[in-house]
Image 1 (tube, rainbow, N blue to C red):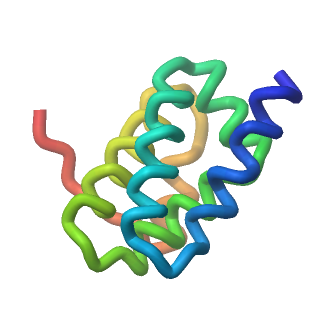
Image 2 (cartoon, rainbow, N blue to C red; image 1 turned 180 degrees about the vertical axis):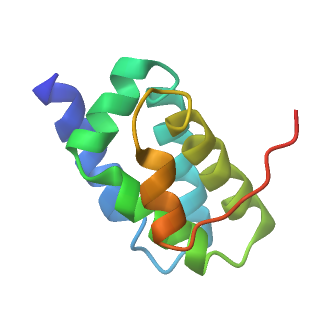
Length: 97
């Protein structure tokens, strides 16, 4: 598990880049890594939830918002209080099924 957390750290660091393309690419990779519950657990351990919320609240590009919401929505699939932290930090997004 520690190896996967270490893999997430550079991706989370890329979310601080001024480049929207860099952020979209990092989030696309994070989305793949967090497609499973164990991947989402690793993201939590790496402190990724707060980073994702920050990206969502500051994102201006549609693709960046879309990819960020995809990851955040998958975080809500688990039996955790992630949704509560998102709401407390002002992250609100609509899910369309």
